[in-house]
Image 1: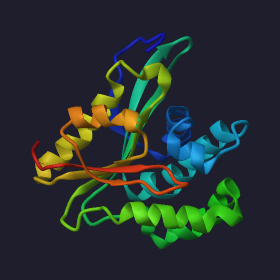
Image 2 (image 1 turned 180 degrees about the vertical axis):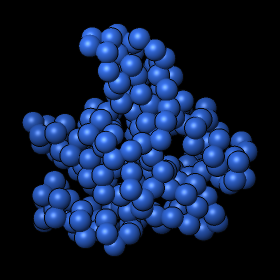
Image 3 (image 1 turned 45 degrees about the vertical axis):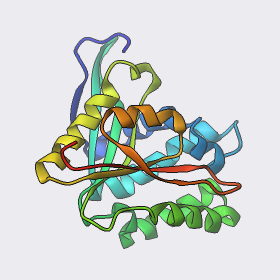
Length: 214
């Protein structure tokens, strides 16, 4: 990480972190296969990806889920910066299915992806979600870091924090990724691919499970 005065630290997110979370994840994912599909216009994709993550962080995961951020103290001028975040759902919980989130987010989602595409996008995510286990588990909805923090252990620090919670509960962890380049990172943390959804015209989705205590 550049201009670091202290080592990055992981802590629980607050509402004040939403802009920083959105920026870090927007920078992490704007060129991801999922977001290339969601926002095909290269001129607006980065901004739309930031707005997308602000929507889900602010309306769903920070108020109703479990969100960790990795923070760096920079020097010029001295101030903390959110460099990455991980969004989790506890067993039996789904922050994205809460009526309050659905009501607040729908107009924004329609504006981001286009009203005419919204049904297809919804069907895609519903099909991806069919791979989630029926047994109790922790769900990793998103994990990403600002490119300036990548390679410095920020992503692994976020992952370890969540896995420690799951291990304390004696439960597996489930996630999906649409980027095959991410598979080695997740495999190093004990995940294995359980399903591949490869349908014409949509991003390939890799479902992954980490058994309890792996």
